Image (cartoon, rainbow, N blue to C red; front, top):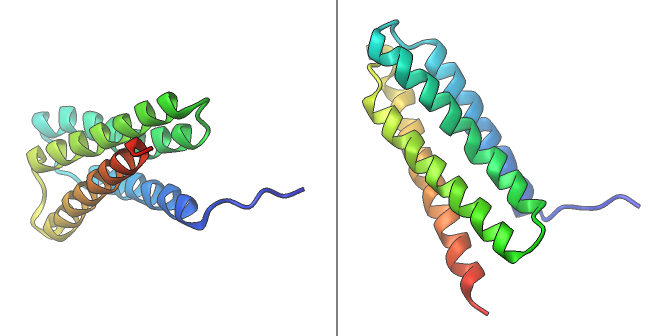
Length: 121
């Protein structure tokens, strides 16, 4: 029997996947500077970790495990925002940088709301 996922769950998995893809594309086009080299590495790790931890949360072993993974997803989204703000971008990347900062903020808020809603009995 085929298991049908909650559509909202799937949408957030897809959204975090697209976020990671856009982070990687953004990083590929950053100017090659010493600070960007270090920032890029951190940004790819945190940006891809948002979705990976969300997927882990959906496969959690219990509520405590779920809550921990969601907290990590929120933390990684916040960290991604930090690295994005520090990145030295090319002028033609300003729109993408702004989008990614906004998306990381929205993901933080979504995971925060999930945590809040999960804590109510």
